Image (cartoon, rainbow, N blue to C red; front, side, top):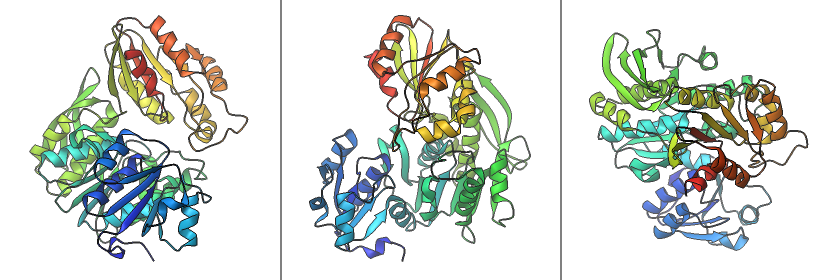
Length: 458
């Protein structure tokens, strides 16, 4: 039987394993704000954990069975192994175990209007942009976003309205535990191939996510992505496509770029809704803005106010984020860790005023690097200087074959200026010696590569 919040009594004790994670911490914050007893465990203290402690949560460092002795429910993520002592104790003592996705889905189900933003790329940015739009329109949504957002001073906001927006990730099919009335699909690409067998299974996963809106809502989807259209073909769902040109229900026309930032008209069929000038660069953000406007329009938001929110949005944390300057070189950071994302980020960066464009790339997981090897080799053509460091393994063990040094060597065959440097500290030394005024530097990847830029700025 599916878990619901109605299963919980008032003041129930909820324990979160890995409470410091960006999504788990958001769920814990919501439960703290709603008067539940919250505990959690994690490896070390972080800024997010300090915030939770200030809210009344009790956090244990390290995983031990005694951490969950008093819990009524234990929430965990796919990253937690079955031999975790807290998981084992909960099973042995019949304490309900609920996945992070199931718990988020249970929260989502309590809202009349719930939007899940999915897609291989662009989830965090689109969720953040929609947050800005709805807040400016006075709709006071509850927000769960997979990054730090300045307008809500974190990654979660508990609103007082009946509107809920969240990222919806396809990894391990977790978004199939959600209850969206609007399912946004920004794009579908090959990724998470340590879980999915290939693009066909990925399309099927997104199709199943879209089907969650059947008879109770609609799908907002990119009409410019062939995999999206294949996934939605024959579903019989209410689909609102968006795109560039007048082939989609919501579309952009008369796009003009200034230093990489777009200004354009937004149309709904033959009705002009607004003119938008973005503070985030690239064509992909034009599409993210169209998805945002579509959701706002469907929900009846004041488009004039929503547009102001979109125009005020200047990016989410670790998404084309300006970190500062070193010797006149601008240091940026981006979460891009998939070839499609890398191309989009560097393509936008190429249009900016600069001297040399540097990319400091940290591959993320052996499985992604191995399965998308050729695509990675073709992703960096827009940069002038490329440095690649060792693979950030995340949840994986080395496969004995895939190395970042070999990736750098294969990229070098394309004629690019690429160097492999094993340690982040060595990269910092090189940048301090070689950067010049007017250079533009991107640290790039889903691991800890961002520390390189922060350290040289300090």
